[in-house]
Amino acid sequence: MNLKIMVMTAVGAVAMVGPAHALDAAAAKTLAQKNACTGCHATDKKLVGPAYKDVAAKYKGMKVEELAASIKKGGAGKWGPVPMPAQAGLSDNDAKLLAEWVLAGAPDK
Image 1: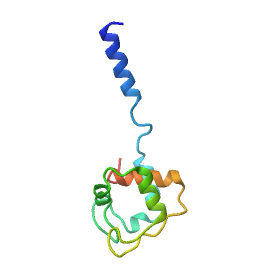
Image 2: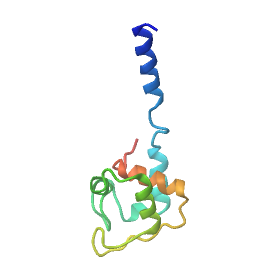
Image 3: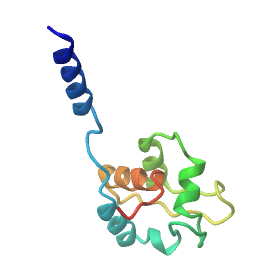
Image 4: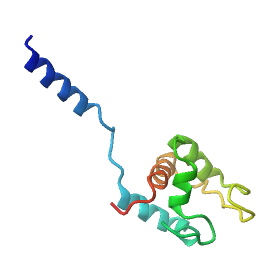
């Protein structure tokens, strides 16, 4: 096999190994609105809870599954005295979509 074919094969293989899916920011934002997340959180400013961008910065490197579990469980004391209500009714897939979106800084696109 010549070098050109080997390089082309390697480039093609790398392109195919990309993310399994792209983040659907519009679906995640709609899900956040539907589940009242945006009543307490905004993208870039603190409301009742921290801004999504602040959450993304604090939890940079966190696994999506960990944040998804935290969203479903709710909690208190991580960001101050106001508790975050549990979102136990979310499916695991919806919780993961929200977590991925939040960890990306809640992009619009």
